Amino acid sequence: TNMAESKVTGNPTWQQSMMRVKDPKASVKFYQEKFGMTLMDNMDFPSMKFSLYFLASVPKGEANPPKPGTKEARKYLWSYPGTTLELTHNWGTEKEEGQVYHAGNGKGDGFGHIAFACDDVYKSCEELEKQGVSFKKKPDEGRMKGLAFAYDPDGYWVEIVKRPIALEEKGFAAFTLKQTMLRVKDPKKSVEFYTKYMGMTCISEKHFEKAKFSLFFLACVKAGSTECDPKLPVLELTHNHGTEKDPEFKHNTGNEEGKKGFGHVGFLVDDVYAKCKELEAAGYSMKKAPDAGSMKGLAFALDPDGYWVEIIKRGGYDESGTPYFMEKK
Image (cartoon, rainbow, N blue to C red; front, side, top):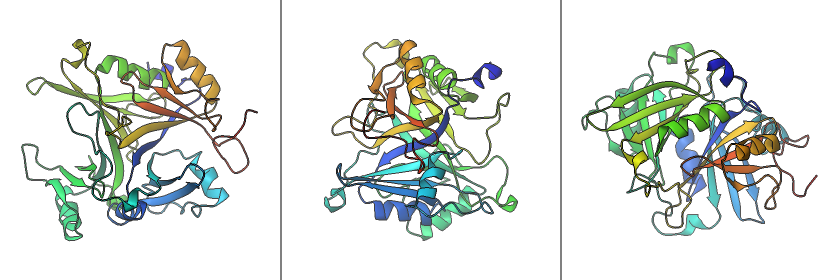
């Protein structure tokens, strides 16, 4: 199947995972200072009162990306071969009291966490703790030793996992963005959507019969390969056995009133219109067709669980790489 997968229409690559944040100053600083991420670009949309911040784990020794806010940064972002963390700030939330967004992991929630990989989980967590980061689970707590969960400023869970091989001496940064975890109702349907249509490969799966759950790890890999580039993250799909047999069962996707937090995953493609046509022909629904709304040329499809999947034009539509336009061409 790998050869077939390499010929997925439009060359999709996983470019973003989006989470809404209450205070971008605090969140951007947290991911830059605690996890060594680089701010690739930020954009303000005054008419719609929101801002976007894109962060990535840029390996040491790689040239610094262009300065955020410049035309060069925008071009680079919308043709970026890796995966970014997109933080969305709806103006005014920073003035609200307490937690604004729903971090997931409640009853029926689909989104679980993002994760970073490092060489030594124990040492890294000790350092994070010294810097004031709070933990849901430290590496030695609970049944599963050697992995941890920290809280970010919005209360999202940030898993800290060990790299299979030490990479810091090879010039890697201390942390690399490593996963986005989503719970899925029926893994057959979900894996088919992401492999057949979104250019991913299922690189491994783990089944825990006693605990009644399975994990499927998907990544964008070179044609014919089953190994994930250590610089790139995986999409971890968690299946709690039996949900697929329950016709009533449905996950919250992070976009419901009162449950908003995680927003979507996004993929770059060569042609948004062709990709959407193909998805619709295969029976998938659109949350936003490319010509709906004020931002044209940009779409949101719904995966089998109803998660929003943004479909974005690689390289954008104009010379500054903007991936949408405001009226029909």
